[in-house]
Amino acid sequence: MLDVEMLYGHFPGGFMWSTASASYQIEGAWRADGKGLSIWDKFAHTPEKISQDDNGDIACDSYNKIAEDIISLKTLRVRHYRFSVSWPRIMPDGTNKKMNEAGLNYYHRLVDALLEANITPQVTLYHWDLPQALQDVGGWENETIVERFRDYADVVFNSLGDKVKFWITINEPYIVALHGYGHGIFAPGINANPGTAPYIAGHNLLKAHAEAWHVYNDKYRAKQGGIIGITINSDWAEPRNPYKQEDVDAAMRVVQFMMGWFAHPVFNGDYSDLMKNIIRERSLAAGRPQSRLPEFTPAEVARIKGTHDYFGFNHYTTVLAFYVDFQNQEGAAVISDRTWLESGSDWLKVNPMGFRKILKFIKDEYGNPPVFVTENGVSERGPVNLNDTLRIHYYENYINQALKAYLLDGVDMRGYAAWSLMDNLEWTMGYDERFGLFYVNRSDPSLPRIPKKSVWHYFKHWCQGYPKQNSSIITRLREL
Ligand code: PNW
Image (tube, rainbow, N blue to C red; front, side, top):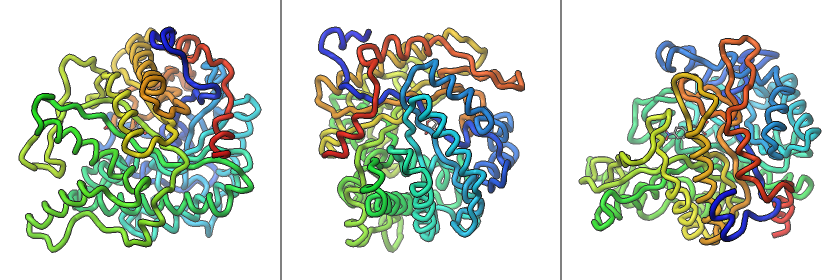
């Protein structure tokens, strides 16, 4: 039991305890049954892009292991599961001209098996595996992708929407734009114009999200009755020196440029003035004729504003921010506090209080939306140790802070998904960094899923007091 729970109470009835995964990270079967290639297939097959030249060709072979995955979920005793659909698996060239029924059928079998096991699916439409054919014409830098994504979303809603009532349009547009089209460390690995390409990609990601939301809202909501939103990731930023106003302001800029880049348009229709002003100022100072940040037309602002039924939120870590003389766009640099526990990932340090603070920030900044945490978790690397004390410590303390955000700060918490159900392809880090509640033994060809100790804590200690997990929250949201 969590300490704050003993003192004050617990999450609301129907709170959606869940765990998460993503298609490219677990499915494997990279060209089975007519699947098209994704940008991650191509990226992973390019030498030296991924640690140890790992790839997702087989991954956890979830494409062929629906039964095993259901057993893991049942062992964990969650009643919700977040997974993503691979766009090129159902539309090999990214368009609705050619459908791959066999690929679509996999998701029907998965969803049917979940429902049969009393587990509610939470489905992400886009968790980074863009059809390579669409990247060949510019990917997220080409505005025509907005229509392609709308068509794709339409097909998925139409096919799966009788069974799926929880939709996430896009996972972490920030990472897609910045890592995919800026630093180029993620697929498609583009780094030619790091000052402009991420903003163009981000602009199209926002428009694509909005179109998918509107398709659902106009065409499916009335008859299917689900909810839909976007998942936005953000670190929390603390000022390195809390007594220095410059650092306090720098920390706010970090959050406004990370969470706010996407959340501000979705909730308010446009980028924040802070972001617009800083980028314009710096663009002009560098001798450009206009801002590197594209502008939305008034019609686009109206179209994007309010495209949320909830705030989907991924959170892992906190950074310390301090003022630098506008060397980068935020006019801030970040480091981490050496007193925070480290993890298997360089960028991930343990600071549970940052979770509570950023949840409170979401409430204050975006008008107290219902919040579903769609990812939170920690990694290890090195020798296998099923006694994952760091993960147990991490979840216990982060969930405790989320509970404080709910009980003490009044954040409208509706659900929580642990990243991840099982060890999987951690993008450029390959299989080196392991976020799973279940260990996957990769040296055994049957890829067995073996529970780490945290599995036994998840339901017993953190979800205790709410054994009656059900999806009544969706029903209540529909009634709002
Ligand atoms: C998320 N960072 O990505 C993704 O949604 C997952 O697919 C991924 O496995 C998980 O977090 C763990 O990394 C991130 O560098 C990738 O700050 C990188 C960062 C954050 C999140």
